[in-house]
Image 1 (cartoon, rainbow, N blue to C red):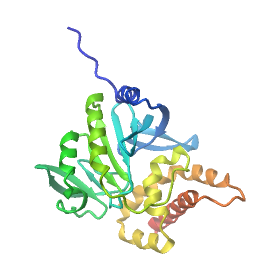
Image 2 (tube, rainbow, N blue to C red):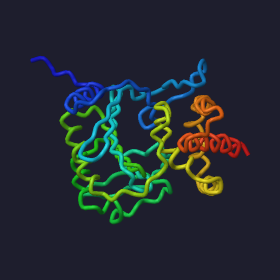
Image 3 (cartoon, rainbow, N blue to C red):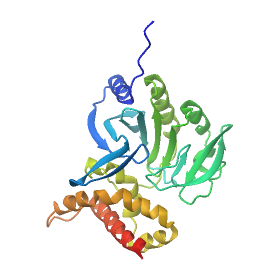
Length: 279
C-alpha cells in the first residue's frame, strides 16, 4: 500500500481557503517565531532567511463575528483571531519573539503544564483574566499544542502556530478560537494600523506597543526593559528602517496618517535605542 504524503502547511491553507471561499495571496512575512532573518546586503530594504522560512501565503475570512487571518510556509500554519483585548502579551509553550517576551516558568491550565512567557518574566495568575474564563480550557483542549506549537495572547487578539496540522484539525481550532473569543469583552480601541503597507505586518505588534506611546512613556518603558531584550528588538526592526524611511517620504507635504506617525515613532525609538545600547 502506498504511503500517504504529508501535506505541507501551504497546502493545508489552500484547502481551508477553498472551504471558506477566501482568496489566497502571496506574502513574505518574516516572523521571528518561525525563522531567523537578516538584512540582504545587496538590498537594504529586503530581508533574507538564514534559518527557517518566512510565511509565503495568506488568506483571511470571518468566523462568526471575528476576522481570522491565516499564514503558511511549508511547515507552520499561523492562525490569528483579531479582537481588541486590552491584555498584556503572554505566550504558551514557546517564547514569543515578536513581543520580546521572557520565559516565566510554567503555568498549569486545564490539568496540563505549559511553559509560559510574559513581558515582565513573572508568571501570570492562572486564576485571573483570560485564563480563568470558562471557555479557555476547552479551547486549549481543542488546540492540543504539540512541542513545536504555541499560543500567543496579544492586545489585539490571539495567534496560534501549528506545525503541519491537518485541515480538519486546523478547522476545529479556528472554530474553537472564534467560539471562545467572540463573547470576550472587547477592550478600548487602539491605533488603527490597517492602512500600513503589508510588508510592515510583522511590526504591527511593536508599532502598537511602542509607537503609540508618547516620548516620556517610551523612555520610561525602555529603562524597565533588559538590555538583551532591547537589543533583540533593535535587530528585529533595524532591517526595516530603509523601507520605513522610503514609505514616510512618500507623503511629501501631506500630513502623515496616525498609523504612519506610529510607525515613524517606532523607527525613531529603535534608532535612539541603538545609540542607548552603545553607551
